[in-house]
Length: 115
Image (cartoon, rainbow, N blue to C red; front, top):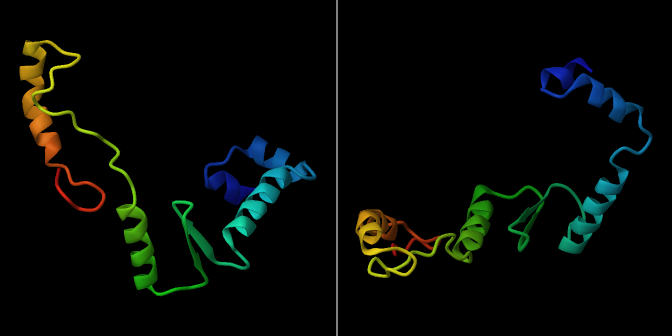
């Protein structure tokens, strides 16, 4: 109990979970089913972006490759509107936003290209 409380858990909640017979059983079974669908047959098994699985203890290079693949396949989180596109704002607001939009265009996309 002391360790749980030191880790920041509420003592009352920890006691309730420990006293409950199957407190997280449904959630754990759901995680097990998802792991089986992902191809996990043992531990450790890592799932990255729900698309890539790494089974067992692997060298750093394997994880680097998987992370690079996952990151490269993602769409940019932000679509930058053209600086001259004034849709949705008046000319004064557009002029105010122009420097920020120019700066935003320099942000790299997930594959490393600068937009």
